[in-house]
Image 1 (cartoon, rainbow, N blue to C red):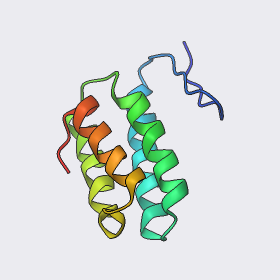
Image 2 (cartoon, rainbow, N blue to C red; image 1 turned 90 degrees about the horizontal axis):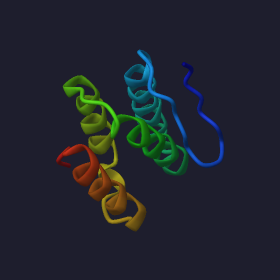
Image 3 (tube, rainbow, N blue to C red; image 1 turned 90 degrees about the vertical axis):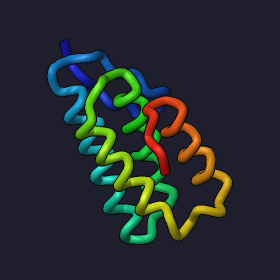
Image 4 (cartoon, one colour; image 1 turned 135 degrees about the horizontal axis):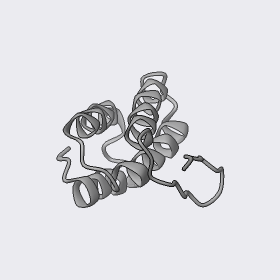
Length: 95
C-alpha cells in the first residue's frame, strides 16, 4: 500500500506511515501559522485532520492541539472557528 497526498480531493490509503504523515502535516502547518501564513497553515491542518480522523493516536492529537494553540491570533476568523469545531468533532481535540 502507499500513501499519497494529492492536491485536489484528499484521499489516503492507510499504511504504517499514515499517522506519521498526519502528524508531519500538523507540524508543518503549525510552522506556517507561526510565520503568520494562516491560509497555508489551515490547508495543511485540514489535510492533517483528513488523515488523523482515520487513526487512533494520542501523540497525533497532541500535535493537533499545538496546531490549534497556534491559531489563537485568528480565533475570531470563521475558517478558524470551523477548523476548531472540526477537530473537536472528528478527533475529540479541545481547543
